[in-house]
Image (cartoon, rainbow, N blue to C red; front, side, top):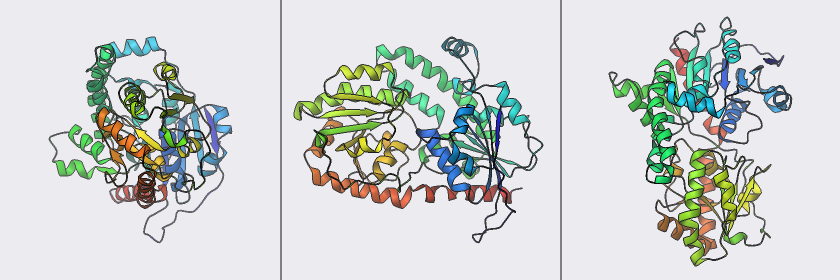
Length: 435
């Protein structure tokens, strides 16, 4: 275990808006720096915008070199403590899938060292203990763990059982994916039980979308009234840094930029793999039948073998990891989001919106984002409809610019992190009043 202590200190204070400085203990599955994928982006921005007003102790999995290279994160936290990432082989995952009553996500980060680290904090005082994601829930969301006067806030990044259920429903339609469908069916049922227990144990739950909140409400004890269940959940969507993701007014000189489509994300994530393989097989050929030079650029780290194989298909580029996704998004005409499974609020969509890009998405791809179809983005759920929407935009630059302007305005109005994170303080304030 490795510890970092920032010696800054401050007296407890009441702010002019009536909120109080609090001592926060935040648990994350990996060090949230650099913020380059969904979980780390959300976690880093939560910490970044809470740190000026509250004292943060961060407990996370991580390596010493990662901590050394995370100077911006160290500057925000009073203290950071890390435990090494646990190792778990594919054989172990397969065995526990068959034998354990717990879902894979509950076992993925099982670590005696992390248990010892969290247990060592029992004698300290925190106003709020915030668990970021279901993988960290095992360390505090059980009946044996207790820090006096602390309230447990569970930040559910996804309604995980819904993600597995939608994965099952998608893969069950294809014989070649029945093995994946079986895995998802098993995980779906295990997650229902485990996720319910985690949510029941927490004092308050944060969901990333209304759809996720409703799924969690249905998951909680049906003996309690729906009104009581609703009062335990607050929707706080993902956000975007609108000062970092800014539309470019420069004319792009890249060849075929006006005929380029782009998709970004962590490319070993199952919903992203499904989205791109479906797009490549069912949608892109329809687009290229009408616009032969149309091309797709897939941007994101850790591309799975099924994604790397797409490079053999005409009109597809797979970049792998890039230091900055913004030039790739800016240099495309349309951002595509053909997601068919998953939950939560997609950071990739918010980033494309902030960059002022025209977006074509499935309804599930923009779930949790309060956009108006046809004004802020175009929605399509069948291959033919999706292809038609993309072709229309590739042929109409004025329409692309109009969609992009509306998308940017919506990102600024509702999804800037500076407007999102204060909602956590409202949650904390209610928990403080309940002490």
